[in-house]
Length: 183
Image 1 (spheres, one colour):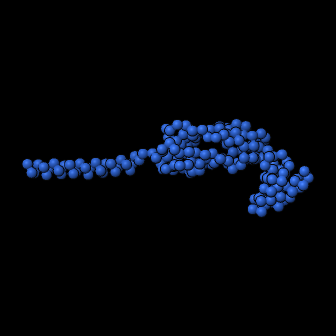
Image 2 (cartoon, rainbow, N blue to C red; image 1 turned 120 degrees about the vertical axis):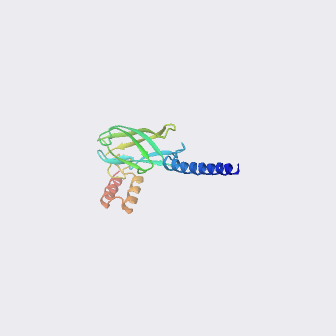
Image 3 (tube, one colour; image 1 turned 60 degrees about the vertical axis):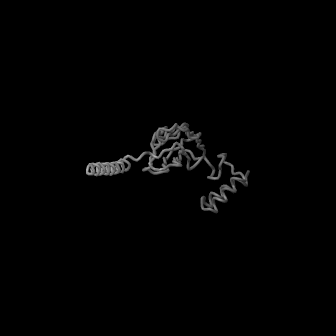
């Protein structure tokens, strides 16, 4: 009887060790996704106003994520802007891909472009991205924020700061001063 208890104890010990080893294998190869439903995604642009036929960058950033994670994204662009000749995007962001993810957009000759889209982390509910509008106009300079070809006092102040910070040339600043002084 003592020998049988020892054998049963040994069998139970071997079974526990086997379960621990199997559990470690399963955990290592089948890690659960770390999506909680609180993650967010933002879409921003390198510019809100661009010159006709210029390019700008769309930036998609996943926030509040813990690896591993994944999100599907759709975006539609109206108004003539295109990404590689297309007016819509469908892509997936994953924890092993770059974050943020960027796309180069080409503006049309005039008007404005509006982006409308959404995202979904895993199987959690679809979330809307705020609409984003990009104005297309021929700016006098980068400080002509309202695209009216006239530099206001506020825009001149921005132009001066841009020149001091090396973000525009002295010639651009001169054009802004002439426009401000003549109006």
